[in-house]
Structures are given as structure tokens and as C-alpha cells.
Image (cartoon, rainbow, N blue to C red):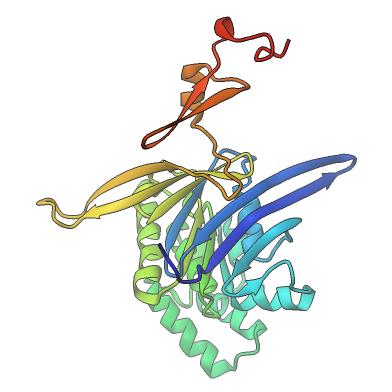
Amino acid sequence: MNTTMPLILCDNLVKIYKLAEIEVVALQGLDLEIAQGELVGIVGKSGSGKSTLLQILGGLDRPSAGKVSVAGHDLLALDDPGLMRYTRHTTGFVWQQTGRNLLPYLSALKNVELPMLVAGAGLRFRRTRARELLEIVGLSQRASHRLTALSGGEQQRLALAIALANDPPLILADEPTGELDVRTAAHIFDLFARLTNELGKTVVIVSHDPSIKEHVDRVVGIRDGRTSTETVRHIDVESSAENVATHVEYTVLDAAGRLQLPADVVEELGMRGRVTIERVADGVVIRSIAVEGATGAERGA
């Protein structure tokens, strides 16, 4: 059991949006823990709540209820100035759309300097650190180039350097490889892995890329505003083949004792409405109630 405090802790996290007279529950009691230095992917269908989670972790949106703590900051307790400081110094964002990451009229070097300028850093420090970060992401030879002279992969590497500018402990990425080819995407994932292995950063990536499980420590699946599954990647160091990875998928039981059965299992077994839970020696068995064998009360009569 991990006794250290996780960098990210979400406990029964709820987010409700009100659109006209309609309330939309984007997060419905989500539980999540992410350790410092962990590289985690977040997956789920559109509307599952994964992007809402990322916005809350980044301080760009406020939760409605529950608990969310990041690097010791209680995000429900922060006032507006505190939330601004949190966003500036605790998190760095990489967006899918380069227009949200980069200013086209500035050089790559000045794009990286900008967050430090806003934070009040001096010119000498900004210039030195910006060059160091461009070296880390492999763009030291492109420092004077503007956005139009950079490829899609280079733009995302530059976005990553910008996210690192104020040395935040947490990097958040929303579909960072969504507009890249497979080879370039793999290179971006390798850079994220370097951030965790060499710099100790915690990285959370929202992605639709099915290959993400090959590049991260753990994939958290979100369904209907709750964590539903976790896929953990294991490297077999004793295998004769180099870096042989296996993946184990778990169904998540939340703090309230709720779990979401895999959709394909529910469909295959025709499970609807009520089920029975039978305790056995090594766990429990969940069974659907066959309609033909159900009592009137079980059929809702």
C-alpha cells in the first residue's frame, strides 16, 4: 500500500454545468489518485468527463463538490488570485490546437520566455532557461524560428517547452498527438516519458490514441463521469526480449463501493436492472436475474 501523499487526489469529485434550465453532470463522484512522477493516460468517450477533469486539475474550472487536491493545494478552497497563482506555477498545459499553445508572431525562444515574463522573472534568467528548455525538447537550432517555420511535431515540442517554463510539478496534455502522424506522436510520448524519468514531473494525458497504453505507466478509463477501469503497464525485466510489456486491466471499485462493469460484458450477458451478488470463498459473483425465473417483485410487478 502506498503511504505517501499522492500529487493528485480526487475524492467524490462532482462537476455540474447549468445550461439554461438544464443541469449537466459532467463528473459524478469521481475518485482518482496519481503519484508524483507518474505518467498517466486518461481515456473515455466524448462526454465521459475526461476533459472536464483536466480543466479542473489545471485550475481552469472550479469543481461543484467533493475534494480535489494537487501538490498540496485544495482547489475548492482557493480564491481567484490563489487559483491564478496555482495555474501559473503548479501546472503546465499542452493543447492539441497549436493556436492555444503558441503565439505566431514570436520566435520559439520568446514563446518559451513569455510565461516567465508574466511570472516576473528577469531577462537573463528567462533567456538562459528558455534555451535550456529548447535543448531538452530538441529545438535548440530552431530558437529564432516562428510558428510558420515549424512542423506539427516541432510545434508540439515547443508547446511542451512552454509548459515547463515556470517549472511546474504537473504537466497536463489534452490530445497532444491528435494532429500528428504515428511516428511523430511516438516521439512526443517519448518526451513525456523523459519528463517523468529525468525531471520527476507528473504528466497526465487525455487521449483518444489507442496506443497510449504502450507509452504510459497507467491508463485510467472514465465513463459517465466516474473512473471505471485502470490498465497498468508492466515491463518484464527478466524476459529474453528487451522491454517486453504486458497490460492488466482492472475494474475500479470507488470509495462508495460502486463499480462499472465493462459494457461488452453487460451486453453479452444481457444484464439489465437488478442483479444478485453472491459471496464466495475468494470474492463475489454478480448474476443477472433471468426474466423467466424472476418473481413478480423482481420483475417490478
